[in-house]
Image (cartoon, rainbow, N blue to C red; front, side):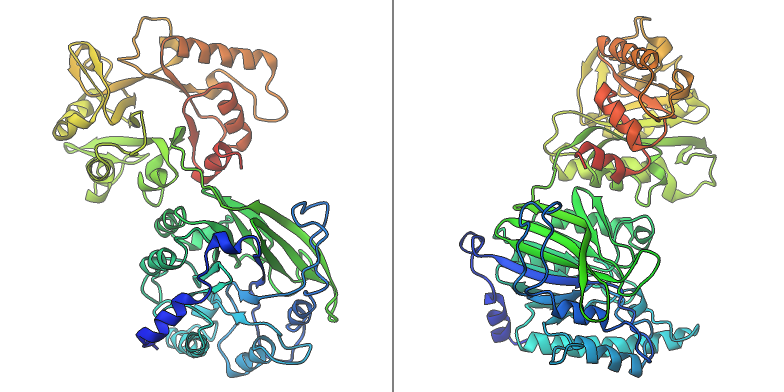
Length: 567
C-alpha cells in the first residue's frame, strides 16, 4: 500500500516538534522503552503480557542505579513517552497471533494492555514469517503482516503522530519534543522486499535533524558477530556515512536475543534483549532517557507477572552533542583488504590509510587474490583498486581523504614473478602516475598515493630506476645497509621470526626491548614499521600502538577502529 499525503498534511507534520534544540535542551526530558523480539505466537498465552505489565509500571518506579549511571543517578522516571519495537513482533503470520498482539500492544485500558503510544518495527521473522517452507506461503504471510503495519502507519500519519514515511520499506520518523526518532525496520538499505530507504533517510535527517537536535535511530539488525552477517557492509557504510553528519543520541537494535553494548565506527550500539525467559534470564527491554544533554540507557528486566522488575546492564551514559571521530587513521592497515565484502571501500569507510592487495600475473593481467585465482574481470587490480582510487581522487580534489596531509599507502604483495609483474604494473599505473609518489632523478616527490611492493619484490630492476612511481617494502635485515627511505619507505617483517610473546600478561622485558630496538632503528632511517603474522587481537593492537608500530594490521576493521578511538 502506498500512501498519498496532502501538501497541507506534510506542512503540518513538518512543524511537529520543530522548536530549536537551544530552546529545548534545558527542558528536554524524553523517555522511551525499546523492546525487541516479542515473537508473538499462537495462543494460549504464556508470558507475552509480562513486558506490557512492566512497561506500564515504569513511570514512578523506574530509577537509574547510582553506581552505574552517575549522570541521572537516583532520579525516578515520572513518565514514558512511547514504546518502540525493534523488530520481530510476530513469530508467524496468523490472524490469531495478530489478535493476541493487538490486545497487548495497541494502547488502551487494563494492566495487560499498553498505556503508551507504540511505534512498531519489523524484523526478519515479520518480513519472512515461518508460515511454511513454501515460497508462496511466505509471501502471503508477509502481505498479511504488512497490511497490518501499513494500516497502523497510515493512521499515525493522518493523526500526525509520525512525520515522514517511506512507503516501500515502511521506515518512518517522528518527534518527541525536539528529539527526532527514526524506525528503519529490518535495516537501512534493505532491498529484499522493498526499495532502499537510504535516500529517504538522508532526506529525512536533512529536513528534521539539521539543527543539531538529537536523533534516536532504531532498526532490527545490529553489529554483534551473529547479527552483522545479515546486514551487508555496503549498506552499513552508507548508513554511517549519513549518520556522521548528525547528532545521534542513541542507536538501538534487536535480533540477537541477548542484551549487549557494541561499538561500531565510534557509535555505541545498544542491543535490546528478547521478551521471554531463556538462558540469560528473564525478558527485558531498554529504557532510554534524554534529559538535557545527558543520554542514559539501561535494561528493565521483569521478575514476575505483576510488573515487578530489576534494573540491569548493559548501561550507557553519554552526553550530547555526539562528536564522531573524523580522524584519518594513518597507522591503520587493512590486512588482506581484498577479502572484504567491498575491497578498498570498506577500509575507506573506516578512514584507514593503508590497504593490502595480493597480486598474481596471469596471461598478462594482474589479478587480486591470496591464492592463485581463476581469472575474472571483477578481480583485476585495475578494477578493484586503481579505478576506484582514481575516481575518488578526482572527486576529492586530488586526495584520497580531502583533509589529509599525507599520502595514502597502497601495498601490493607480489605473490610470484615479481620482476615480470612490475613491468605490467608500471604500464597500468602510467596513465595515473601524476597521482603517485615518485622519484625523478633521485629526488622524491610526494603524491596522493604511495605504492610499495612486498612479497616477491622486483629487487633487481626497481632500485636501478632513476625515474619511478613505486617503492619497495623493506625487511629488518635491510636496516643499517644504507637503503634510503626513498627506495624502501616501510619495513615489514614476520612477528614470529623475532618474538614469541602470545599476548598473555605483559610482554617479557627482553622481547619488549628487542621490539623497541627494531622500531627505533627503523625510525632512525626515516621509515615506517609494520609487523605481519602477529595475532589480530586487541592486546596486540594496543601494545603496537603504544610502542610506535606505524602500520597496525587488522582483519577486523571495526575492532582496530575502536581501539584507535579508545573504545
